[in-house]
Length: 609
Image 1 (cartoon, rainbow, N blue to C red):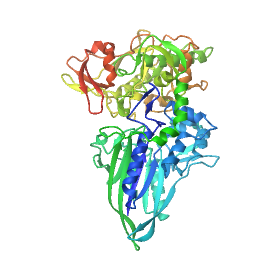
Image 2: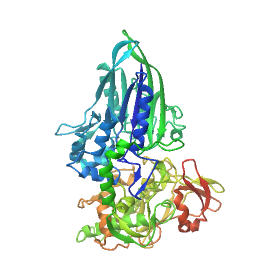
Image 3: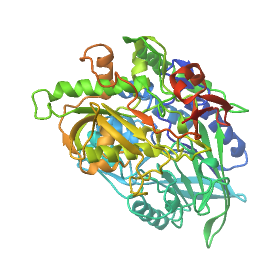
Image 4: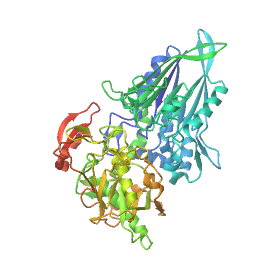
């Protein structure tokens, strides 16, 4: 018997092959293109009698303007649920961002699902969940001319940090269990229930090889659990099989094997289809066992690009048209080109506007309180910076009319405004963690500037301060906020109002709920004093600021808050979008030199530090 498993993950409501921020087609993304690969992969094996199963691995419901509109249209069928029905999905899992819709909206949308919705380690209190702990799929086939059946057990897990990241939506309504503890329990139950094959939909990436509690990226120890036969991974927007995970312990990145178990991680936004083929043999006495397996990814773009599926294009037509119309609404004006091509080395004007909008809204809400007299800062990080999402994923807004789509282009996440009080010591740790996105540079050598293993949205810039980043030092903190190099200090000369910041000096900082709730593992958050502020969407705050409905804010008006310590003879290689070459004057201080594009299409710019 042969079983083919097809998988998507991290669609983030990229239904069409279209970029709503720039209002242009994008051939590298979109479920309409992945759908063509799905139909082809089915056709290849169905004629020979193989079982074909199709799964989605979560973070499908949020992430683009079309997702926002679809979630609001309560009287209409949800476009993605219709697509899952049209494509014949067998089960869908959930991801952490799906819970950002709030439980009411999430349950309403999932009630339209055409197949089981599985989320094994998230438990809703006080009410029955739409999702279920597991699914058992029974498929009838003929083996050597005789009718028989196969039972496939499916469970699904999300990072336990979801409870904190989405706390502004979930309140105390859910409990999220440890991934590995849940997985061991579900595997035992599914085997006891007679399942021949067990598939894990794991909205998690490849991180530590050790089975420690509360892992966010738990795929490696998860694959080491006996009796899991195939894993769909996700969350980090990387790919497997592929070079993204070369060198990790217990991982065959070329073959898509982790502890010998086939694993696929199909990228982001419909960029890839994951395919796992299993060959099984069976006897009446011992049942079915897997004798061979193969894992592969199929990209929607490249030498043989997948066309858009006409039936899905038609299905999405109304919501696509309505979204384009809505995001064209004018809200303001900009005299300067706003882009994020150089967010990691120079002033990002768009990021400065986000910081100014946050500060303006917060000042308004702190008037007359005890916090009004404390100096105010604003923390913002780039939300479109290339990285795992590819060379097209940058903010790029020309001078002129600002439209609703530009608001989302500046801040793509549905975050809310938060505020904390921190000390000068906290500020130092905050900036050290932020500077961890950079590689250590050495004199006389060229090194890639940004560490691809660090998330770019964790590069917080603290507007209202000035400070120096010394890249001759190693990072003080590792990616999960643990002290890695106690003697290292990349950050120096932190100043407020041109005076050195002292260890005990207090600041109010405007920031988003993701960071305030511990997202990114920043060490300062454990000791920060939260300030109660009204529920305010940062996108709405930004819209009001651009429409002059909020007071003009001085934060963000000056030069770039950070600068690099001089390192004569050291060269940093910045990977950015190809259109960055039109804006090289913005980084003239680094004597930029173009060195071509890499295999993924990123423009490579050599910077002299």
